[in-house]
Length: 68
Image (tube, rainbow, N blue to C red):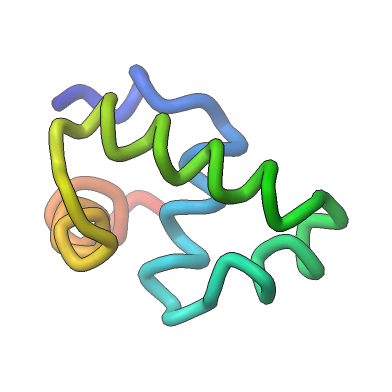
């Protein structure tokens, strides 16, 4: 998966998920609704072809962590 398939905002959310943030915490940090965060997470999972937040975290450490 090419990291460029994720938007800047999606990469931001992936990073916050990897830091252990909940959807509610991410919503507060980014000043968006929790529902919007859930939509982003769903779209991220589709783009990364994963089915859990844990797999998003694994993808982050494999693909983005050294470049953030």
